[in-house]
Image (cartoon, rainbow, N blue to C red; front, top):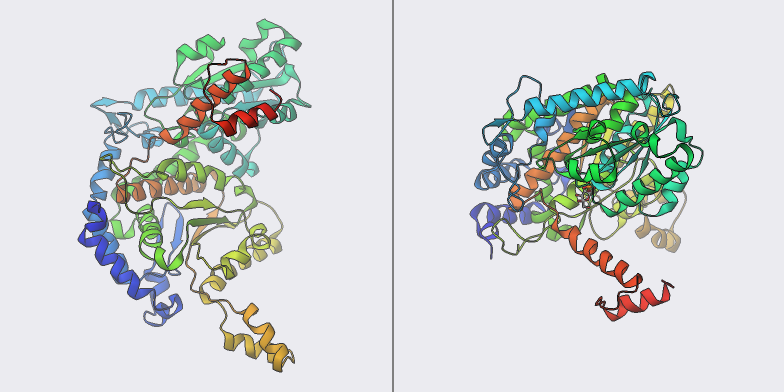
Length: 545
Ligand code: F6P
């Protein structure tokens, strides 16, 4: 048994959860007329309603005791102090420094990184404005109309999601994203682009990532074939931590935008990795995005734990996963943004959550004896309602849902926005309330059904209900509120990792596949010395390589 599962707070929580699981979420409203007010909190313009969770005052109290036991406040302090909380790589996880105001001292080991952060941010903003205004000219003297970000994982998902989410604010050159090593993606993006008016941003923390280097190499050949070798300097810029690798690729240091090893890939959109965002929406709005994230950082750092949005979200996730989990039988967490513009939010969150907390070894190197991150998935509403919501309502396992709802639309179709809001609110209510056999019976009788026909129809129309959700309301999807929302989820991920006693900031789990891909490539190239398992060798033989 680990010290976590043996701890008094953990045991008390599990015991309380077992008692609470006997009742219904809706009964908790009967016991507390003020529940919607008391089970809600607000920060940086984001309103969190968690009254539809199967949790009462005592559950929250015990969760806060658990947070204290795991020294959550201490860990938050360590993160903001720039300590090396990413212990397996001996690094700080200091993405909060990327969105701190210019006058804030953000120290790592006594050294203020603020000046370098703002130095690069200023360069990013200035360059983005040069491209947007048409002052940055391609080799043939043409202004840039299309920007292609080449990167993968955190060097793709964050900027891709933000650019899509803020489409309504985009007034710069068109921005495209290429991540997959599958050449189909690059081919599709390049189709219809003019080399003379295209700028490539090669984004990679290490600048050795297989997919990114393959795509960047192919893009370079496409450009050189049209404009010659001398054009590379006007059509390629790099975002990386490694000036050495960038130089090896042939991009001039003057065209490189730096970030640092204390910025994790999945936490990097706030750094120079956000260059494509700044090009799309402009420097001022990019800074608003950072300011929104900073507002959430300030709240996370200083608000009391019981009113702290990321803390509440993180603790409720632990409650659902580890305490009520036995009843749920659930292995997953669903996220349903009710905003088409957030269509890439879930893939971004999947990397954030599952690359951070998909671990089974604790900070002391011991195997954990409790569940860590659930599989996270979802899609935008209302599309998801016509796909997987059937399972959410009537499937045997319970999957907690986070509903995210920006209230004001960026478009003029107001009636449809009302329908969107109504659907979002209706889904969380339906998940909680369900429909009893008696209600179904009355409904069917009202439709004239009776006897065997009624009895046969009835069970299929019953909803057990009692399925928990959070609802997050944003006034609108603008740079400030989007920044705050993303920072909220970043910190929620960290809160869970603290409770689970795991390091959220490394990702050793992706290394083995990368290594084996090199072996398979070597075997394809005819290296007979490569050792492959029989299944893989057979598949390779069948692949015709
Ligand atoms: O998939 C592993 C990973 O290291 C991610 O953490 C990272 O976001 C991605 O690869 C891309 O890495 P890089 O930015 O170094 O190309």
